[in-house]
Image 1 (cartoon, rainbow, N blue to C red):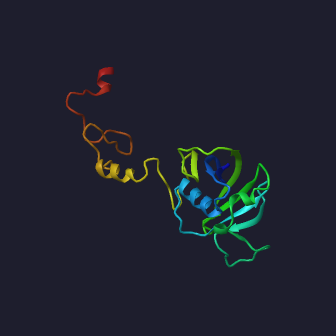
Image 2 (image 1 turned 60 degrees about the vertical axis):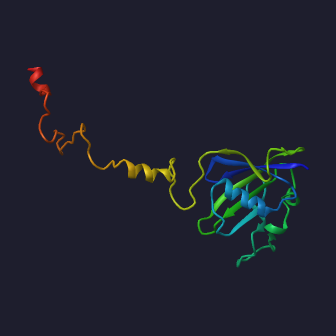
Image 3 (image 1 turned 120 degrees about the vertical axis):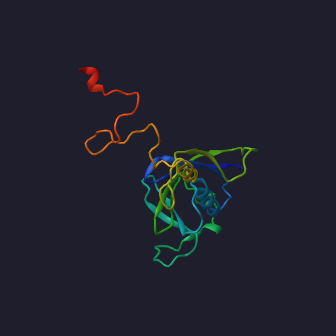
Length: 188
């Protein structure tokens, strides 16, 4: 069975992307769930795909469900629509919007069709990941959840021995240390 390979870009930064391989018979719902997993997002919000052209203009909607909004044409439903049925050309594009409140937007582009599946993969599969994904609900550090453990283990707020403190004029506080002479007296 052929394999469709899509590149999914984060709209605001095209250096952040994931390549996803999927069967043409898989539904848009599977593609939706794979994108969320690839970008480390949860599955708690509304979502929709739009068929798109080379300029990323939004066309026919393929939605998770029928939402209370005005449609130009009734949307197709993700769970009933095979990805392959919406491929109209070899450069097919889709715009994917997740969480209508935060309006996360991803650009989905068909970048290849393979004739053979990889027996080592379970499809749909993320075959390449570039860049640190945006944090769905706030800031994300490179250390992630481990940063709080480091902060707790090493209290960086108190001054340790060997580190001097300076007052507002830049002078050392607490006098001279034993064994050290004033640099000015050495120069005189």
